[in-house]
Length: 66
Image (cartoon, helix red, strand yellow):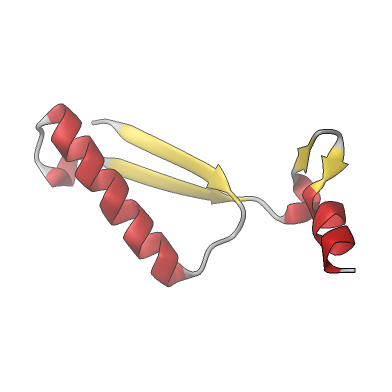
């Protein structure tokens, strides 16, 4: 069973529903297996636990909001 893991910032559940449907659509198109065999795992990371370019995402968001 193909499994896709998506890591990112927290999302609203309505966005997650669209995301997993679209990812499953793409998997089904690529692999040609029935939809029920695909797994999608969403791992959410708080902005204080993620950094880009040596800077925490939360600090970048706070700076941009100022």
